[in-house]
Image 1 (cartoon, rainbow, N blue to C red):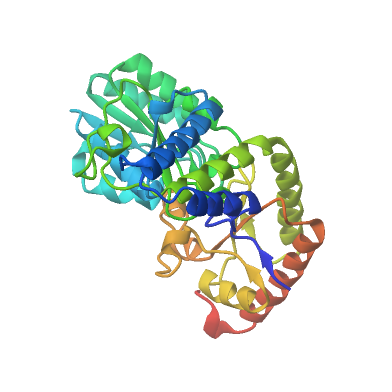
Image 2: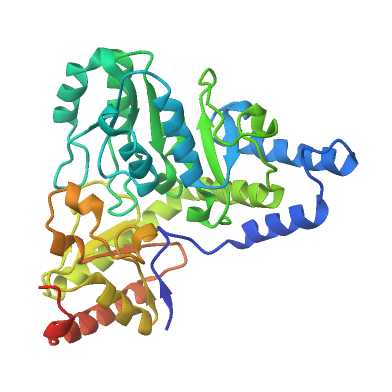
Length: 382
């Protein structure tokens, strides 16, 4: 048995994405920056991919910039906002690729309050923003949290910030929303958006910045004049072509995906709760994307994940980027959970390839392995 429930970290590449990668690698080997015929052909394919993605989200081609991944994209966008004077408002539940560069900005960052359910406390945040209206340089608010799946109030906060200070920039990490299919609607409200195709069956190693026209981004990598003279470095046409295909496919099937994953999510969560093992589903009453964040009190997530992996169930603990270090989830700590609970979080995420029988198998295996851990005090974190 092998059941993959870690799609929030990396989804296996789809056949369409693989085909697009191979077609570009084999058929267009030139450097898009070169002036010869091969380079011109590669440049043409690059711009076709850019225009396809722009059209998907109702944007112009020059509003789409390609990077090496979401981490570079977020760092670049945050640097752009930081060049404006004033305060940058963000929530402490952002992905680490936002939290770490923000921490380096020290007291220029004002942290927004978060509810125990996992979403930004809009009323309290609004009061905080209104009190510093003239000082707002930017707002950073993710579309959905990568650990809990909880969808954040991007539109409400973005529209408020724009009313309070028209010169402020709004940045949104849209990575977790890509498969859910809310990108086109959400990007209308922000100045900068970030995507990562490998979350939806694209390749690792390519990212996207969606930049509203008029927003001048400070070059993050210096060198050549690639990406409208905004980002230096030779781009990978196979990665970009494959990534765009994956994002387009995800947008095309978003309706069926949502319906299917909601059924799986409900089945897993009800099944885990029926085991009577004290599991807590984070954000249970919040609107979420296809992610289940489950806390198993008294159990270390790393121990449970090891046993699940032995049984063929692939899941993750907290943020995937921190899974090796096993530090308590900064997201859960920000929501008010204690350290032990934050170390007991297991994240399950879904795909269209999963079925009801897979979920039933996972419920059974989780129940068996939790029982083993509970019977062995040496493996508990209590």
